[in-house]
Amino acid sequence: MKRSLGVVLIGLLVGLAVASACAQTDSLDDFQKGLELYEAGDLRGAQAAFEAALGLVPNDPVVLAWTGTVALQVGDTQRAIECLGQAVAHDDESQVAHNNLGNAYAQAGQIEKAQEHYRRALAINPEYFDAHYNLANLMARQGNYVAAFNEYNRALAISPNDAEAHINFGHALQRTGETAKAIREYEAARTLQPQNSAVAATLGSLYLQTGNHQAAIAAYQAALASDPAMTDARVGLGTALYNARRYEEAINHLQAAAEDAPDSFIARYNLGLALAALRQYAPAELAYQQALAIDSKSVNCLINLGWVRFQQSKFGEAAEAFSQAVNLEPRREVAHLNLAWSLAKVGQEDAALAQWQSAVRKFPGSAAAHLGLANAYYDRDEKSQALREYLQVAKREPGNAEAHNNIGLIFLDRDDVTEAIVHFEAALQTDPRYIYAINNLGAAYQHQGELAKARQQYERALAIDRNYKPAQENLQRLQE
Image 1 (cartoon, rainbow, N blue to C red):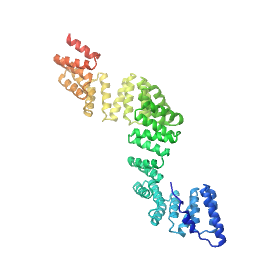
Image 2: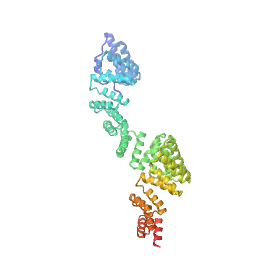
Image 3: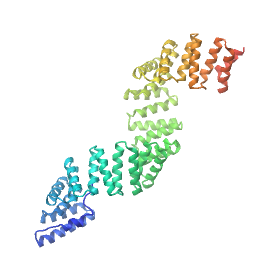
Image 4: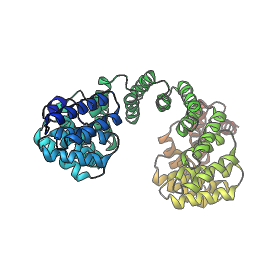
């Protein structure tokens, strides 16, 4: 927001100079009429009155300044520059005229000239709040944030209770990632304007970014208390409630937001997240589909749609969603992995294997990709290839219990019991309750003839799950 003529009206009016008594009377009448229309909000009427006064006293800096300022406010930028330029030519010490001429040049995109006149206003009066504030806004729009921050600080040192300055300062800080400082400015603005729903909603968004979900909830609730129809605030509140794991409340607000704003992608997407969190997969699937009808190229939405379909055992439809995600964003690892799992579930083993191989080529550092490929080889009884991939997993994730367990199985199958035991024990170092490794360790001990140790491991597995059949059967054979 730019500041223009305001509290200095009396000072400017005193400077009115005219050529004759008749001209003085007529110009004063028109000028006074212009002021009255301006105060009443009739800018066009005020402009006509000031132009009439200017016709009688064409060189008066006060009338020129007012005519230019109103021209600027009605969008006649060139007329504003013309009049305000003449005003400062006749009275170079008018800080207000320089400030408003800066506004006019800024509106015309003549940035250097705008800066020049803001600075000339400040040279006349270093404590001139409006010039500091307008210069700060100009610097922020140009991306010169260091200079902008300095000017905002100077402006607020002069007028610390100006809410708009706090808001614009906060916005500039927000754009540069200074979230904590932005929150400070918006909180100051909210103290000054407690009913400002936009400020409260912005605070809610900033609190969300910092993970302060409770503060975000309170801020969004305040925004909705001031403006119940503020859909963005309702979406934000639903999102904050979701992050706070208050899923049912989140669903209520996000459903309301989706009804109020049929074109809101984020309302439906976040609704899908909240529904999926409560394992309401069918309605979550519908929410994601509705979101994709708004934005068909959202990779995150496609991945989540595939996931809720997978949870409902709709593996073929899940594969379709994951395939679309892969095509849209080939470097999205999770889409490749989920596509491979889905293909395996529908019995397309060769396609799944090819997908795992592709994933390993594209993401060679991914333990999950190597693990998926290893399991695919293992299921095909291609144990050498499986071992190679499991070892890659263990290299990238030394604490991966599944990889160590399966490496142990392959070594046990090769009668290399000592090496098998090493890997079963490595799996149990990561997860002492990993029942598969416990049972397999018992089998390895039994293979060595260490029956007491074998019995101990089988009983350990059954203490975790008394119905675990492999341990039951192994213990029974041991007893027989």
